[in-house]
Length: 439
Image 1 (cartoon, rainbow, N blue to C red):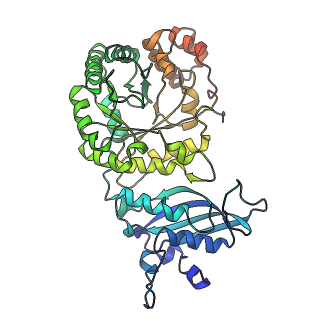
Image 2: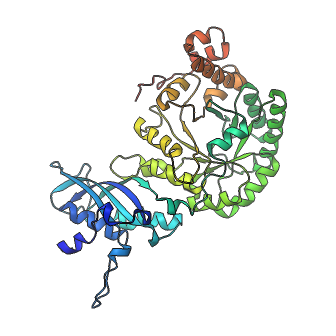
Image 3: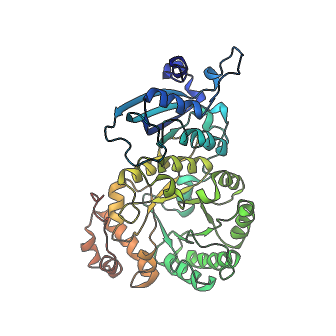
């Protein structure tokens, strides 16, 4: 690019009508001039060729993505990781904000992703290492999306659960049980105090535990538990499948007794989720398979908060995400970023419930709560309930007892002295991220 070409892909916010643009924050490493690399990045994701040969025209004022902020520092050691076929030249570490005109692709998630996470971003000349760190949408763009149907407030209303976390449990064993014993485990956990008993994200509509049979068994068990506890409950059925089966599986599961549905967002695809949202009669819950493949490395891919925002945009009422502690291998600040992406204002799009999870139990609840600083979250143990020494009823009770202690300002060990379920949980489950200061 010539200097004039490069300048055509730069602007200030004052130059633009920001209602017409999505803002994208990138970090990247480039070889050579950072301004040229940033211009290539903007060009390749929008109007890479902005005029016809021999014609006096320029599509950039209307169609070009524009760099509105760029910061670059030399990186004397070269690229942070070896990169095959990297361009030669001095290496710079850069942060850039790009305003991308959403009129180029419209309110369509596949086209949005093709532009901001596609070939033009990850094959931009001179930029072998790049990560999309954040995405922000203007109100006119958000107005074209439905977002969550129920959201955080609707889920609380459905469960009559206010001023506390929502307590989930992943029924274990997650794979192998037929419907009847699987339902009995869910029933016991509801009696102990769980709000939501859920299928594992890997439990599909399979011959040894068909979705219809499983949903009927869990639906009946849920009704029994509601009658015995005088408290609303949810059975969360996994309908992850081929996109052309989603609506039918929704109808089958809901008719049989499920009153919320789990979908693995990225394997199914966000456009498929948006289609399901328009059909759904019950809350939709996202799970995170495949997301780490985009987000694990700090210098490459897509920050998981971008994917969280997109899941909320597509219509999920709940987003289960990698949580705190060493098993999930997610930095604490990234978990907090994703939680904020569920709850912060997003125009007409309702807040959804964040559920940071991974190896949780009554022993880790306080640490999660202290980190988040709010009760607006879901808590999703698996073995912490279903592997409890006193069974799932005792495991669920230990979670509720832990919350009683936290809400009452009582040390857990003191409360456990008079609550055997909590005492057993604290003894049984190692708690590597109990401390609010843990990484």
